[in-house]
Image (cartoon, rainbow, N blue to C red; front, top):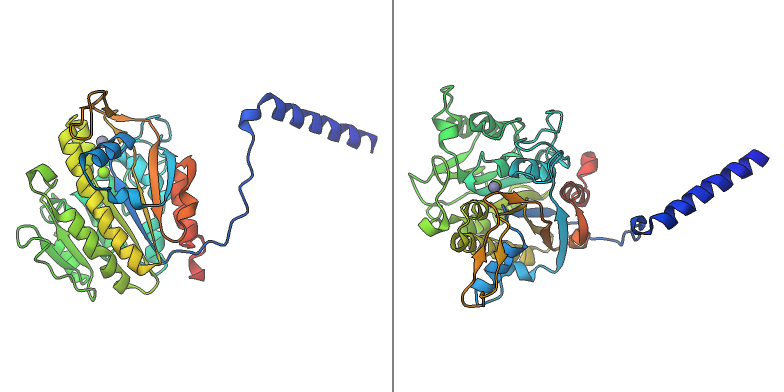
Length: 376
Ligand code: MG
Ligand code: ZN
């Protein structure tokens, strides 16, 4: 007994000295969770490479308020990958999709190269409808990490067959040639059609000319490989963002998970082209506007807008004013700065604060109650 008291005293002394010596590191217990209304649907919008400077440039480039300014909850997110301070889009999207830190280049696999289950796969297993929309090829790192499991992002032909393995109800993006002009001779478009898919390509018709029927899963390919930028006339992203939510809502009464990517904000910033970065940012913002309009009417949809990382180390310099932005870049690559998160709808409060990109996954999964798939 005497020893026990002594031991407790030592433990207490140790603990209190630890608290005193490191007051900044106090763990603040989270507030008891308020009764949060759960969302039926989640729409995750990812602006690839969209840091705070990119958003700021978009805001001052347009006279009106951007749609992104209407999301009431904001947070900040750390983006580092397993071993690198600076992530790439593959590891960044895998953190959102699977909730694990992994190596740069990894698509839906963990740091040991083991496949990790994605939130899209979990949603599909729970009977929810799912969708992916991108302004890159649909096999590109960001969308791919939600549906495929390969350890090298450049293996586009290996990524494409995963679109046949998981329930996906709606997808739009480039990369047609990875489906129908493959080195292994398979025609994945035909295989998808055999599974009931209604498939259209940019050569046949524009997205505007398509009439997606919720009775069948739908896909539209916007390019053979990578779609053009906004500056060359690409205009399908806001329309895709208008079509996808009501389509998916009709595909399942259990709700849906939809990821929409503004892929080319990143590409413009890699080129250190401020003007194109702003154009891509505003195009992405128009997609946000379409989604918000749906969410407002629907009332059961959580909308999250974020980025996988910042690209270019963009800065808005002296001499910039509202009419003429002076955009400079400090690198041709990605940077490690925190990226913002914006949220609207049931469960949005959970996205306030500073947290890790893997926490974004955990929050989405908890709100969709996908930890207990059977319970749905
Ligand atoms: Mg991307
Ligand atoms: Zn990039």
